[in-house]
Image 1 (cartoon, rainbow, N blue to C red):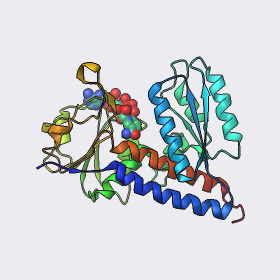
Image 2 (cartoon, rainbow, N blue to C red; image 1 turned 90 degrees about the vertical axis):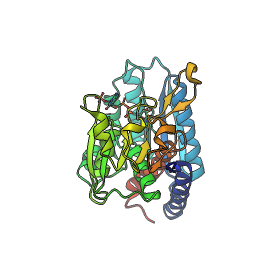
Image 3 (cartoon, rainbow, N blue to C red; image 1 turned 45 degrees about the vertical axis):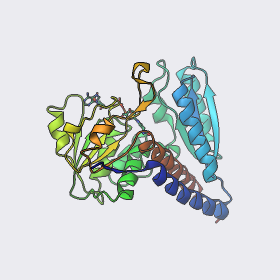
Image 4 (cartoon, rainbow, N blue to C red; image 1 turned 180 degrees about the horizontal axis):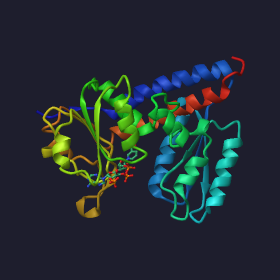
Length: 293
Ligand code: NDP
């Protein structure tokens, strides 16, 4: 029997409606329109698409947005100066630096320079620290989107064995923290490229999150029958395989074993954008605290 489809588009649409209503209430109360500043360096076509999607989503939610584009040749000093300007601008509540950045730029230094209260991606060490202590200021967008999908699909995490495939700062690690947090209460294992007997570890999972960036890596023999499988991966297939996008999960085969499964596209991606909108509202609230309303 095929797995239950976890529909990210539908879940994200409902989530975005809630954000939109909360933005309207906030703006009516305070007179402030939340504003997201997106920073793009260079001409990466995928980055351009992601940023356009995020800006369109802002507009639909009643959130203002602006695009700050620097040329591919921009220096680290140029980028840091732009981030400092945005940090100092009271009309900007959230700052999004679209990754990846060109090779001459130290990504970490730039992300560290974003004001913590404007760090809507939750990449600043202060916000990662708060998250790891179980008192998050911002939700890490992609992992929090995964948690929303699990909740919407009524997949229980409490006491479940959760396996996170990937230990990146952006997805794997914060994903593990959210699953481990009080309330989610999963028993969490994090795997990476040096994990021994990866397939056996994956097969223990009731909830399996794939975030490694390798097309169709997770095969049916790595999945416990009935497990919920969330595919974070977004991989462009070579033309020899028809081009297009594939997740980290071998969808057709895993679909026959898993109990529930997200598609790519239309799974985690839309939720990432939805959580970014929520974080922009949270940032505006934090920076507007104390104003009459
Ligand atoms: P990274 O490349 O930063 O991290 C990949 C992780 O996977 C690393 O921890 C790496 O291990 C591990 N890994 C790689 N190959 C293997 C392997 N063969 N066996 C076991 N572990 C392996 O990627 P990201 O976390 O940034 O992204 C992961 C995927 O998610 C990508 O496809 C990306 O495009 C997608 N993504 C999707 C988003 C969305 O909105 N849907 C948002 C962000 C990312 P090690 O640490 O040992 O090198």
